[in-house]
Image (tube, rainbow, N blue to C red; front, side, top):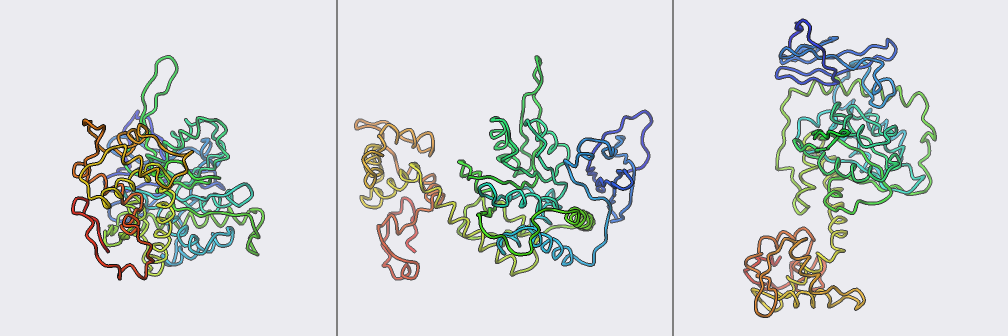
Length: 458
């Protein structure tokens, strides 16, 4: 970075500027009605600048009268504030959340570390999302306000009535997107929201959109950022569901002491914490973060491991790590249970059951259909034609036509069958038809199931 701008060069307005040798973050001093950059160079020196020149480009912070600043669509720190140590910040974040929000103790800890994570999320390749589920009057809005106001450059979407501003603001600021389902007034918002969530958890996957009138132009938007969402129901896409860490809210008595309305103290306290978190970001941005795979949780869905590993990387307390692991394991069980209520899982179970009981290397689609319908009410039966469609289109299993109809080869589809077995949480005990509990599993005689699918007999 250099402070020597080129003459006649028009400035580029940014909230964050990253260079090979440093970092600049915008702050907004509302009392002085001033915006400026706080800077970090490669030697660790922190300073202030009104503008920055990088590779002959001039960068300036958004002006105070810019809509995102003036209307508080995005919340910025007002200055740098020092802190004693990292534990002080952790305690202040958790105390703030506890003061204003009634959530479970486990999730309170998760939310605390998520706030810190949001200030360094760009050091990682994936981000988890936070979400609350509940009906009207269960505290979803308070959830968004309380946790969101502490995160890195929170973007509150209450004023956005069309999709375009959402894509543009996330792309331009890289801040934490705060989404309330009630904010979406038009039907196309739901599909655009899903696009943002499905692509925005992983770095380097932009959303392509066609924009313009008459002459249409394709634009790419970077929507990779932390996100906090409130909905009344789960998403139908279970792959999307696995990207959230969820807290369910219910109607009931609110914990004593929680303010019913948010007064000026809420905004002052959150501002002060954001100021300290900005300093914490600068103190840690140039440090190497240990992304150790030893923190992977055995037995959970790979995507859940993928999204929570970054969160583990910033948690130093062993007890907090174990608490988060316990939460993730339980959440994985819920996801598997939801995923199991589908024709896809019934069809995979039918294939595995036939293969175990009859030790077959191939089976007809008709056989699979009959097994899938075996314990199903006659009114809900699936047809062989529909089974074939699920096999090919939904499960990506290869069938081939023979004299007696379409046939599924077990050896040819071995890898896919193992994948779906794990994805749907189908156990060997279920396939064998054994009703055993966890205590007795080790005492069940080991019976080889067949080598084709390499089933475990634990």
